[in-house]
Amino acid sequence: MSTIIKSNLLILMAFSLLACGGVKEDAKGLDERLADYGFRPGENIDQIQSYRISDWTYLDNRHFMVSNCISEHYLISLKNRCDQLRSTEALVFKTRTNTLTKFDEIIVPETGVSKRCSIESISKLDRAE
Image 1 (spheres, rainbow, N blue to C red):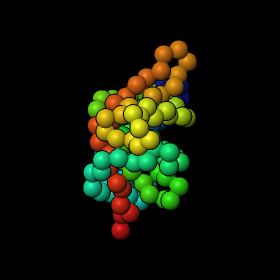
Image 2: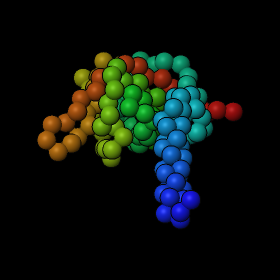
Image 3: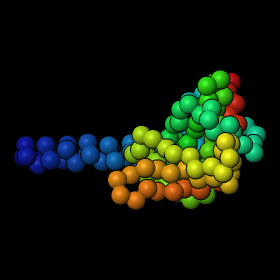
């Protein structure tokens, strides 16, 4: 085999391995993603005091974690895919009161039209042991 063909095959194999690595990461389940952060799903709750939310973490296009100023963590599950979550740095919570409930929405601010995503459920996260 010529050196050009060998190097092209090597490059093709490297890209194949990279592609497989990306697929494996996307195939990781929600429980595994939570475990990576040291949590497991807990009980469903009705509300979170929205003014106490201090941080959020992307998990996948239907789930993200929020934390509050007293180190409690919650899983927010969305009714539908919200692909814009992956690339945003900020979220806006659209609530009816000063609490965040499963009847509320998140807004992903974008240039142009912002994406609205409805909340399906809220769960308290427990520390994995």
